[in-house]
Length: 136
Image: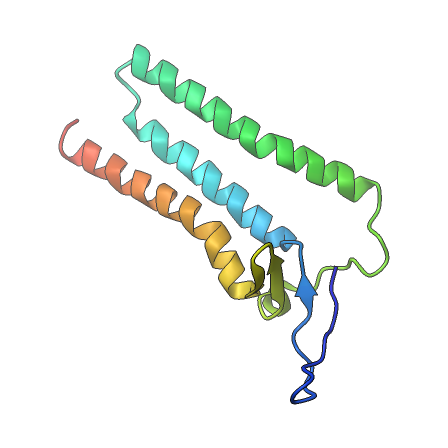
């Protein structure tokens, strides 16, 4: 949902306001989560309980990815309402993103959505590399 509002003081149009994340944000989020899953498996190899726990954690993460993806696909199959066309990601980043505490710049919203998973994936990769370098 995008609306264009005008600033009453200056008369200049404000950026469109949306309450939906761009589909590319979801795609990046899925890719980062898959990266995290593969990085976690850097600790496998000893067999036994560690591999079992990694399998369980990977399963939970796959379910956490799968359910929203299925819901997204079902909602898209029903057809979008008129005016729900998403702009290119570059334009969406300039829009305002509506949150429960007020509007937020689209670029800031994207960073806040993606940063925790990106930090976890990068951190787990670094820890896995250190684990293998030190002979763990």
